[in-house]
Length: 408
Ligand SMILES: Cc1ncc(COP(=O)(O)O)c(C=O)c1O
Image 1 (tube, protein in one colour):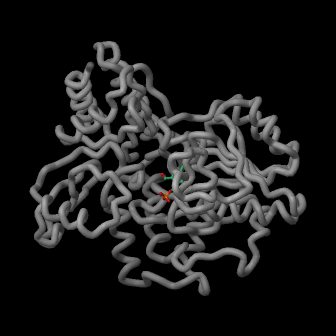
Image 2 (cartoon, protein in one colour):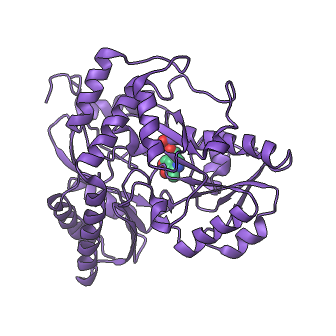
Image 3 (spheres, rainbow, N blue to C red):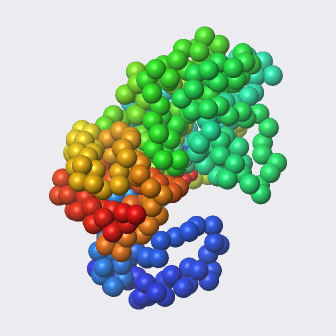
């Protein structure tokens, strides 16, 4: 370990200092990490953890410190770390080109996070709609149990009261519908709706994918009424589900798509991609970000895209996702309290038969495995796309033990 990796602090000291000085918005697990490599993280004391959540919440989809991404960051940091959007720079332009090639020539707006990508998508949709459909066409329809971020726009789009409580008034112009319910979308979508925004897989509420029938219906209805379809792929995009875009599984084409998390290869990079005629609504001065699309972040993201392709990681995500599911099915057959698994590729939700998810996740942590619990009875597994069968076997072994101990 490099000598300064923990600045000489012990885990206990790091945690105490954090608790003393950082605002208490997070319920952190009682562990501090000072180093990461591939699928593993280490504490200051050298304790090793197998990371099955990509650094937490799918933030680091190529694993920790991927050598190709690290090299690109080092080289870019030595060359040009920052110029604002007042100037051109090659990594930004090239990343935009590469992302555009992954769509039907869509145009890119760069952000620093998923939340900002949501904001950008919402603002773009309203700007387009006012011109294309009229000043009244401002309403945005999203789903209950969705998650789109924490800023006022993104929080207002998030159809879960628990994220909004205490922050009222919520922004006007948002309406929620039951996820996967065609009937409510028909009822709640008047012609003057501006956009429908959905996660292709609802991640934060327990890994719930759209169905093909539902999303194709939504696409058809939105097309008929000239309403934009925004797919939030902040978490499920960039190959994690076995396709570059998760919506490719369902044979639809959204008008706007957002992406962040895995895109930056460990740095915070987000994007909004939009159909060129929709993107035109963002003229000079309409939207912006000082750091969005900065040279360092876009160099890291370009390296992440190259790595994804060179190492065939999208196919790996599909294969390893199947492998993981087969292992979970075996645990279920062996009597572990698993009801079913959900998701696609390496975005896996495990519905337990009892409200023991927090207990199971804590047992896993004690045994050196990082997984998330969602609510009382769902485990969420989001391994990096570099995962191999041996990592999954190790995770299944620990899960098996912790589910056995926690079995009520
Ligand atoms: C689907 C989705 N959208 C938006 C966000 C917000 O992204 P960020 O935390 O990078 O702001 C998240 C974060 O979990 C997410 O899962």
